[in-house]
Image (cartoon, rainbow, N blue to C red):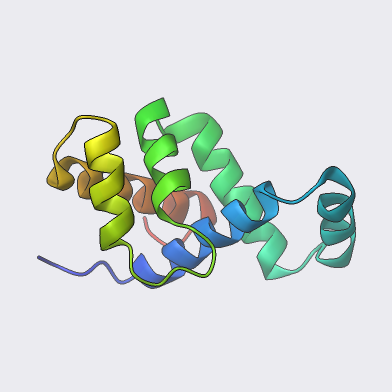
Length: 111
């Protein structure tokens, strides 16, 4: 399998998105004020745009379920997602790759 050059950065972008998404509205507002204009805010906006414009619902659900904030090993989450949604693990990895690519394109990391 070929490793994409943007894989680690895109994965961390998605984890940041999931971390901010799980905050309360007050915490999210404080986070947006604190990080306004910084790269983290641009990463969050890129994942949000990718989730709204480029990704289908299944890829968004896989992205939000598998890439948990702070979890480094994703295989257990992939296995659980695959069994819960009656699909193959390879399909989940394909969905995650599509999500990473869409987020990287929205951020301008790829052409």
